[in-house]
Amino acid sequence: MGRTAAEWSAPPKFPATHYVDSRLYTDEAIFKEEKEKLFRPSWIIACHESELPEAFDYRLFTHPAGVPLIVVRGDDARVRAFYNICPHRGNTILHDPSGNAKRMTCIFHQWSFDTRGNCVEISRAEQGYQERFRKEDASMREVKCELAYGGFVWVNLADDCAPLREFVGGAMDILEPYMQEPMELFHYHRAHVRTNFKLWHDTNSEFYHDFLHYFNRITGMLQPGYFDRRYTGFPNGHATVGSMQIQYDKYEGSKERAVGWPGLAPGGWYMVDLFPGMTYNLRTSVMRIDTAIPLGPNEVLIEFRGLGLKRDTAEERAQRVFDHNTIWGPFGRNLHEDLLAVTGQGRAMREGTDSRWVIQGREENSTIHDEVGMRHYYAEWSRRMGRPAYAPY
Amino acid sequence: MIKSEQRQAIEELVYRSCLALDSRDFKAFLDLCDEAFRYTITTHSAEIKRDMVWLDHDKKGMETLFTNLPKHNSDHSPLTRHATVYTVDLAGSEANVVSALQVFRTQLDGGATELFAVGRFHDTVKLSAAQPKLVRRVVKLDTRLLGYGYHIPF
Image (cartoon, rainbow over all chains, first blue to last red; front, side, top):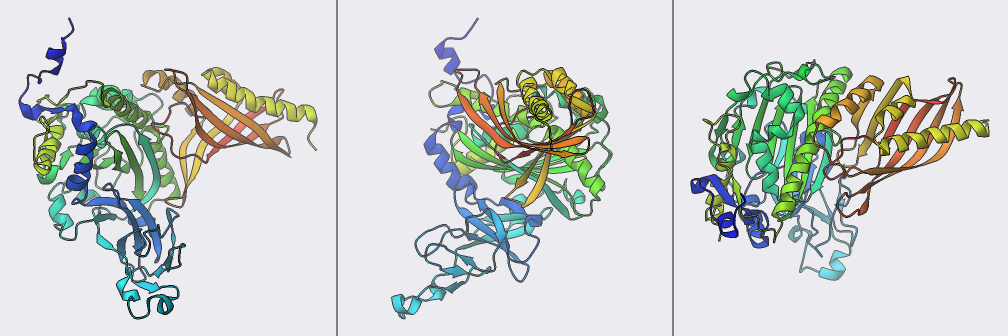
């Protein structure tokens, strides 16, 4: 028998920490507040160092808080990050998503900047500004930038932010042994989907949804060790997922992954979910990184990166690409399923649908189908937003 | 110089491959392919300045892919592949064929159609058989933003 409106709207029969109000995923005001309180003060992955191999290489990145950034390697090999906003008339300085620029010149009035953020040219400066305004007054806005955790470029918009190592804490300890060799990017694509960014992070924070994935059921859930995988929570909302031995040969047409990862047991698979919307996913032969860039309460752009080892032979790299594409490429078995699922959530939860609650009530001693990873995330969300996720108004 | 009936047979092969995949008649598609067939989807990322491979299978791999897909959760919206054969260049007993490709997706609920992807087929066609067969298909996609993606290749 179905429920009445009152029964439907009543809070779930769980502790209040075990569900959240669905309006967290649709409310415009909450979304704007999240950008300021969750994303602006957080360290965010902008790109990988292998995207900037040479001096003057740059890469554009839209920060999840909304700020357009240029990440550029200087003549001193140091990677820095700046607003991609001309201090003159607020125009976009660089337009192409990547390139090599000894001088970054705004096409509008030809103001030019070097890779350290100095303004090196103001067109007809003396005639227009005399002594009132000089190049030294027009440098770019630089933001905090660090290379760490596998050669990724991390940025932070807050000048007074805590160091990256403090933000991440011990969450990356589980992966650090496997990131001692230089990695190299071989895959990048984005998915633009109508859903809330937290719903994407939720799918990376719980494995109960392996029922969605035939590949994961066959190669994982039905195999020994699956239900021993454990979640571990860390300060600042981060969480990790322990490994098991995935039996790839159980999937028809598949076979054990021949190319492994240095130090990682055959078939191994570790994950690190980083608040507020990033995931490291080392699955046997490939490192995948997700970065969520929220565009609205029900709209998100997700960046997907696939990496191998810089020292890969052509054959090893081709195998990693194949492994990646089988489940994680745009035509891969799992990624499409995950994106379909969160799009369905976005459809069902859009404003006005009367979706009321999202239940995170599974308790299985922090093992793989426990929803503790999500609860851990929303505890941090509540701390940063100053009110509980189950009662955000 | 290619004979007009040869060109017509090649064009028909390309168009039949689209029709077969549109109707999810995977056997019909594979019947158009030589035993040495290889299928690859590639694209160039302007963001990372690299060519990428997004799918790569031999004929057996394609067959396995098609066999496995019904076990997965997939978007059921039909695709319509529109190809136009641009060039056919003879190379011995084979022909190199370049076709423009547009892929449209029609929503099941409401029937709205949207452009899903554009790119090109770079096909190698074997001419020695009674009927021309696809030996190689490289789908070079211009479109890289595919929303929640799709399970059936183009």
